[in-house]
View 1: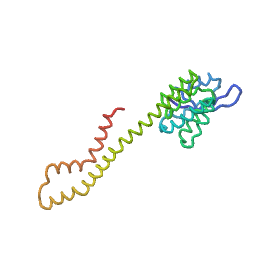
View 2: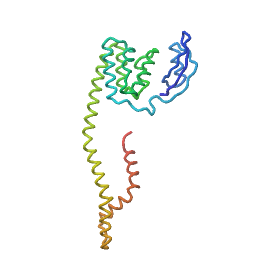
View 3: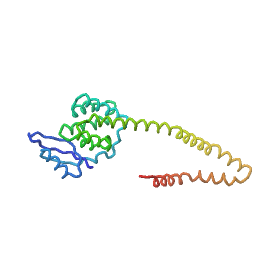
View 4: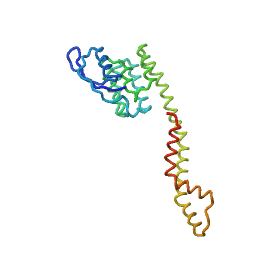
Length: 230
């Protein structure tokens, strides 16, 4: 969804500026008007989340654990969010949380404020927040999500460890083949040329493939990408 920057007047006459996500400028003006703001100016910024790197699950798990503990301790959601947003270990997540905190202080619901940043909050987390808003028990739903997130992070690590050895073998094989074609094959070609003998057919075919590899490789990569699911 598009991201807009706006300037508006509050009911007490104070100037309010900020950013909001909406389907259109008109939709944002209606939303701000419903919150009692008199919109003065709206400018399109960029698509929310477009070109933004996603927050790593490990970083988000640490934030959610701290946020859940603060809510359980009896702090209000804005206060807990403000404290949990101070993350020197993850500047990207800290910037997102600061904007969420600012939106919540302006009266936006937590789930709606988080929905404006899909690079940090997935749909399951947003559903958990909406459930917490309806039941009033954020700690319980955050705890359930934390269990899911912990399992997801552990699974990612196991998959990464399982793929490490095959990747190492593929890299080693590529290095061996590169050395073979760069140093060994030319000597065989020179040796056969010295004795005036024709190269065996499999060797000629292999050399032909290597010679035209710079042409075939892009086509193979394109075919793999086209056949892979979106």
